[in-house]
View (cartoon, rainbow, N blue to C red):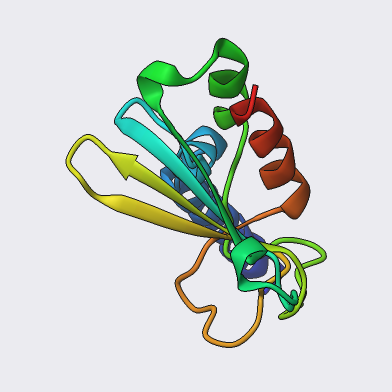
Amino acid sequence: MKRDFKKTLLSLGLMSTLFIGCGPSADDIMKKAKIWNDKSEKITIEQYSGAVQSSSNRVEIYQNTKEKLSKTALGRLNTIYAWENLQGMKCEENAVTYRVKVSEKDNSIDEYYSANIHCNSTEGKKFISVISIEKLIEVLEE
């Protein structure tokens, strides 16, 4: 009886090792989470200022194309990742929030949101930390 249990345990261990080896690697996961890649052509960041008195300052747009980006901006873009869940995500409807759009060569657009708007209807959306977006805006404005 003990011998059958050991064989079963060994078999389960070997099968789980095989399944783990067949899954995506950490590099593949990180590559898919990057917001910028070789096909990316343009980045647009829409900043919403929440509940402000004047509507003229409510939305600011930062936009840049690949050929106009500085080396610093390209370096920063290559270190920004978007996830379905981030530690510290919250819902702040009247805070400064962001939507990031990355346009590809094939005219497709990927959208990402700042992690402080993790409110209703978040299924399928990907989020970027607010600090990452604010640091990106700094280098895009240089």
